[in-house]
Amino acid sequence: MTLLITGATGTVSGALLRALPGTDDVRVLVRDPARAPRGVDVAVGDLHRPETLEDAFKGVETVWLLTVMGPDAPHAGSNAVWAAREAGVRHVVRMSAIGAGHDAPTRNGRLHVLSDIELAASGLSWTVIRPAFFMQNLFGSVNAGTLYGPTGEGRMGLIDVRDIAAFAARVLADARPHHGRTYTITGPESISLREAAARIGAGYQPVGPEDARQAMIQAGLPEWDAAVNVEYARAYARGWGDYTTGDFAEVMGHQARAFEAFAADHADRLGG
Image (cartoon, rainbow, N blue to C red; front, side, top):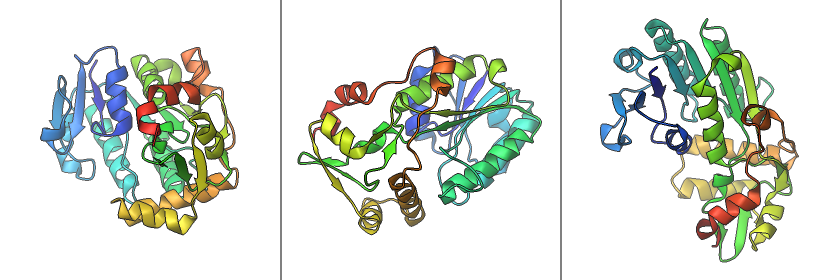
């Protein structure tokens, strides 16, 4: 069975590659071969350029589909689904977004549901995974003993990226029981950034939406991405993400990592 991994140079797909039991039958799709992970078959192509995808999808049985956030993400996802159909792919596992829906409070969520619906209508076997706010998003937010965040006092079901990867690896290993399922995966509890700060021995400083947007742009994030992240922050501050689900434990047989375990493993990156 050949597994094609898209987004292979990103955080989640990189963690997925490490979570897989082996990579002998793994192919990665990259735009720049110089950035490709080692030890796997490499296909050079771009989801935004459908003419580059035929060889990448040839002989593939299962696809991990992750598209980069942006206004044209549905275009990339649509090209991938079409290439999968043409190549005879059996199953696509797609990473969507928490709360994706036509009524989502973010443009990203409203765009993701379009791709979710297209995949479900494609005739392919499919699974959709919608992970909660990544714990790793806190990297770089701690400075001089203070955690800075734009989500106010809103609680979120934070999840470790390593758990997202482990969950995806389990589904990809035997996709049959997961056909037609949409999983929303969270950590074991919903906490605020103020609570997270206290658990790492830091203070908490809320950041206003405009200040957060400017800081992200100054850090090099595209304006569209920064604006959408602020949309998420406003929603989280209203309590939109204050819940957990049992989907992770249903598939994995155990809870996802607690925040304390994540913080202990990454104390060097959360210590300011």
